[in-house]
Image (cartoon, rainbow, N blue to C red; front, side, top):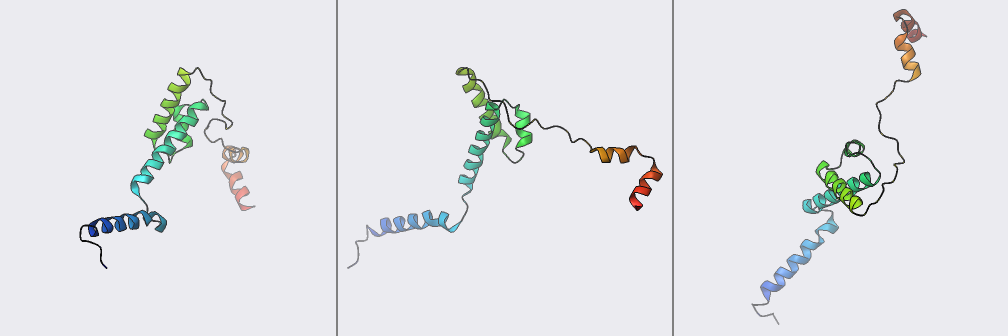
Length: 123
C-alpha cells in the first residue's frame, strides 16, 4: 500500500529535515553557529574584563584571538550594568601586562666589552 501523492512531498521534506539535522553529528561545521559562539565568547570576555576593572586595551592584549568588536560590546554592556546598579569591580588576580625586562645575565653580557663576550662564548 502506497501513501497518497499529496503526502509524498511532506514525507520527503520531513526526511530531508531529519538528515540535515544529523549533519552536526557528522562533524560538519555550521558557520553561523561558529560565528554566534565567537560573538558570545567575545562578549563574555569583555564583561569579565570590565568586572575585573581592566582597561579595554588590557583586555585586547590578554585575549588576542577574541573578536575586538564583541569584546568591546561586552565590556560596554557590563560597564552600563555596573554603573546602573552601583556595583564595584573585583581586583584582578593577574598583574597587568608589562614589557619584558632583560634578565640580569643578559644585561651583564650586553654591558661587557667585546673581548669578554668572545671569551665567555668560547668557554
